[in-house]
Image (cartoon, rainbow, N blue to C red):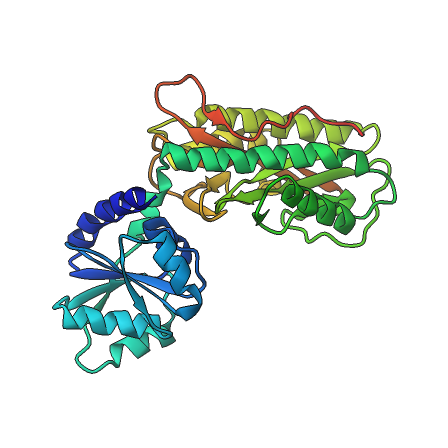
Amino acid sequence: MPEIHAARRAQAQPKIAENGADAALITVPANVRYLTGLVSSNAAVLLPADGPAVLATDSRYAEAAVRDCPDVELLVERQIEPALAKLAAERGWRRLGFEAQDVTVERRDVLASLDDGPELMPIGRVVEELRMVKDEAEIDLLARACAITSEAFASVLAEVRPGRTERELAILLERTMVDLGAEAPAFDTIVASGHNGAIPHHSPGGRPFAAGDLITIDCGARFAGYHADMTRTVALGEPAGWQREIYELVAAAQRAGVAAAVPGAELAVVDATSRDMIAAAGHAEHFQHGLGHGVGLEVHEAPMIAAKRTGTLLDRVPVTVEPGIYLPGRGGVRIEDTLVVRAGTPAAEMLTTTTKDLLVL
């Protein structure tokens, strides 16, 4: 899809000029992929404020670059960043922007030490800002990732039984996602049972499931580079009263957060819509993380929906909404969906479709 990538580069170029740079060195792998289509562990793009881009990679990816990026000038070098910085200077691009969120001090020092090299300046998160709003092709890929996630989740529920361990279920779920067409899990699957459910990012271990457990499962498939993210909490056996209470509260807070996720909504206000419900029920200290985040070529990307974040939601922005309650020593509940903020519709487009009723297994 060279024309899509060319259009994205054209969108980025005015932003580079606005930042006062003659060109930008794009090094974040997801940003390189977004602008060129190349998937590589060693690639960068030299994008001038005006004119054609140059893609650099090493010989391992040269054939893939020729195949996937036929409209971009290709530079085959092992040390890609110095090579592109030298090229920028040779072409008269004296002010070179770089992605400070990615380039280490050591890498920057290498570029700064080049003889007659360009002046270096942080360019900000220019490409990440463009990536927030997805085109329909991207949304279709994300929807496929979410469909695989939901199908895999449904397939493994029968394996949630006493004696099965957290790690066993996590491995089975990840294998099932790949069997259903995922290129890989979007992230390391979280399975947190019993008291481990009070740890939002618990690493699945050898704890066996037991009757009376709440089990939180946070999973996602990656499809064509796009990341799904879904969390459900299930009960193994009839839940206790306190378990149903916090589940119903989180479910209500999640519904409110989803309803608030509309174009123009302030990020902090969306967060508060769910957070205030949980706080009003006496659990303010038991919900410490942000309400959600953007998803796409990275599983956590802009925008971040949290109490102190500024900015507003835009049309065609996929985000998660994931409130939780975590009770130390007892357990927890989190419910998370991936959805697309849409203009002109009464509700966001839900991409993760697994029921949010409490499943009692």
